[in-house]
Image (tube, rainbow, N blue to C red; front, side):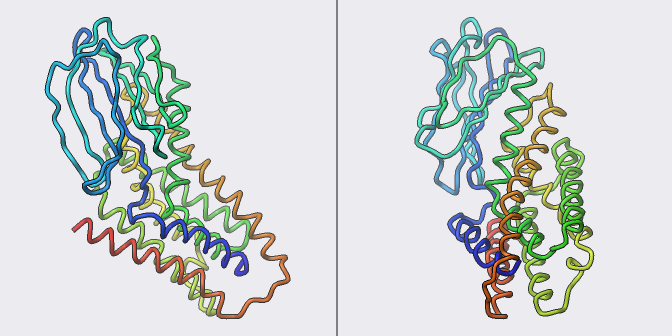
Length: 331
């Protein structure tokens, strides 16, 4: 496993260093049209941003839609939000909604159209498909597929979560213990993801993101202790640590989900498939890591004894830097 760690940790950490300290920098854009009267819609358009810089994309509504109220702009650390109202003669059905500039980006845009009866239509626009024609009836399959993809993308683009999982893999070498550890992590973050998304738990996202980075520092320290022959709690009872920190990571998942919103009439379905997408992405990551681990164990290469410390210090250094940056941003 130590032989594998040198190459695997280097590749993932190189990508991590290329990203800013935010947990999930490639967040999707979000366009919501909520019907509040005959052919009248309130529009919410969220564009991913970082500081004063926002993504150069713009929402383009059907030509028959005319603004009936001025735009109001608000900004946060992660997005710039615009709100206005439009009147679309004959409604939106059959009209084309497009995102100008999306083809030149690496992000997606989630579009949600809510009718007065509470039903919702969901679409996911990508650089390859930056426009869609509004269908007459929303489909539950469309909601499920959209949020499943969002969950997969969220975990695979969340380098901090992947570093935490990688640290567990490097520390827990027995297959059964690893399964128990990953299961504990899954169960824990499923609880807090649901609780935070449904409004039962309210926490500020800044402290959560800083604490997630700190959890990676802790596990990296456990790898270093284990390499010196002094195994800590994570090496002895990894499922306990995975469960406790899984609760924390679930709050991070919930924060990302709040960025794009949930369809009001399909909240349980969207929440379920987002969570399944997170798990699918995590399994895809493990499916890549574990075969490499097996090859690493069989390799005949001999590394210096000190090399066992490299993954721990590499992972811990990145996570410590993230912790400091996130605390500074929060304060």
